[in-house]
Image 1 (cartoon, rainbow, N blue to C red):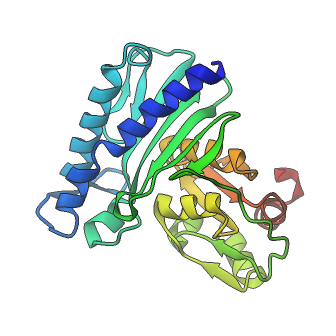
Image 2 (cartoon, rainbow, N blue to C red):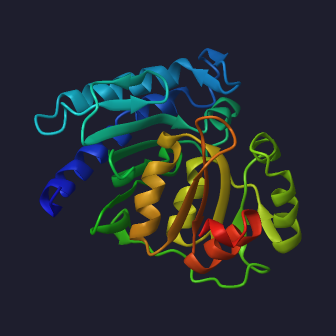
Length: 265
């Protein structure tokens, strides 16, 4: 895609990501929605499904990009294999959403399927009223401000985020989790796509996050890289998942050595 096409795709992705915001916020903390447990143990609500249906409908109305296949967390794959596909996560952080924690958000990415690289990425945490956008060669932005990852170099003093311990356990990274605790004085459990946005912004220096789905991480991929950062993705020991380390390039390399060994780079 040329820059003009990427800009148009980014505009559509932003519209799609923001579309369910009012509906999600209206139900947030109301507990007036059904919560179910999926086969993989994760939670899903009727709001997840309604939001994704809304997002798909908006994409399908696009004369330029509406014919592309869509892969979404709740409704799965729609459409034949093509050079590009949309990836949708209507509520990233459903557990947080059901508990009234505002770190959830909506994620949209446009992926080059051959390279498995995101061309466009948008993360919209509606409670904070912010939209993070990026496209290849066009930078990472939030509310008109160009974003840059952290320039931290010292892992001991850096602010590093990691998720729940069970994600390390299920991906056979228990020992690596212990090494993180030993190496990082400020290892914190910031969660959901909000942690990703704060890493793009340079507030969090780096994130180590195993056991992700494609729709969880593709938008972050282009957001981080267009903000001057680095991301390392590896097939996870958990079937069908990806393990990610992203943020400030110097710290990402140090964390990869710590978690996987130097061959991970």
